[in-house]
Length: 477
Image (tube, rainbow, N blue to C red):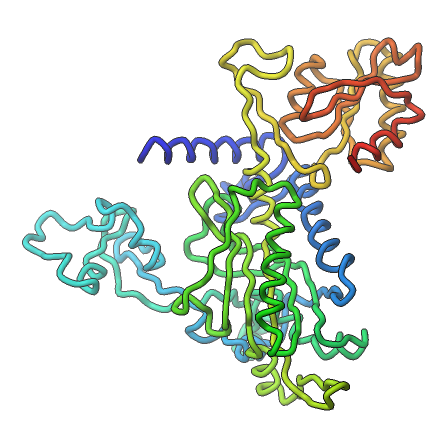
């Protein structure tokens, strides 16, 4: 492993450790040894994730005149997944299985393993030319875990099967939804009629989806249970290029507006051989994670695949009647598909900052490192921390709790009296709290407090009765 790879691995380990230590993300079922690829969001993590979802909803629904929201069911008729192509080979991974340890791997992933692991063979095998052809190379791959022989690749569907009702037979089979957009297509006509929408218009949804991923990993980046933030924009096919470019630009702007570093974002256009069966065009927004550039959102031109197929399989007419031209047509769809979990991970990685030599009086040496999460103000899990200068002075504690009670209805706050004031500043910096409000002895005399800014570390005195107004003004700077 290169020096750069070691550095990036070390950085990711620090972020994962911080996420657990400070209450952002916990391993699911941890007291039972954990459950593979499942995570729970802690007190600060759920605030961060909710803030991201709120920011997405505000941009995609509240600030749009022609986009409305939806919350469709997770369990739907299995006929939907047949019509959408999810129960065919198109929604499947090619897997190989080790005959010895019985672990399964995606074929495309195992080919990325280091050569020394990929080409393990029994010591008695001699004179085999594994480079003779791509096919023979695949056949000679060995299990990267135990060196055992691998089976030929097989298709493995990613849908998660479950049963509805008391009897677990084929008639009771259904699936946990693999994507939220199918629920939108099911309600396209309902929304069109009930909300008197006219093309172009969109339907947005935030919700859980499930895929039986074989190779989940990289913390919360790829999991089997995840939350999507999707919008399906229904248009006339003649305007597909225009709206595709519009949403491509708007979605990149959203990440930049959240404070994501520009150098860590890029577009990647899909080649023709990469396109999903439904896609006419696809562009990914990628983020530069410590392990490399990876997709965080997709913008897709889905054509009329979805509505045409559901119209065909259901027998319901899902066409649109244009009152101006007096013509009917099946709308095309431009999709924006982002992940709430991936966006949360992006914010944790991008906001993570290490400051050598420290910033507070608790730093003991020039080599010591202090961590600051520099979240965008709108995304910070904690906006304000209220800190009495010392906890063994009842009059300071009483005043601090009064200030905390005053601010609670207006901002996400935390009260902290444990440890020295320097250590408490460090704790708040580490979780990204915007402002620390300290109640000291002068506060008892003048009825004011000190506000410390997370990024500049500048402090100012503010009257308690002006505190809410001052903090609100700071948000608008």
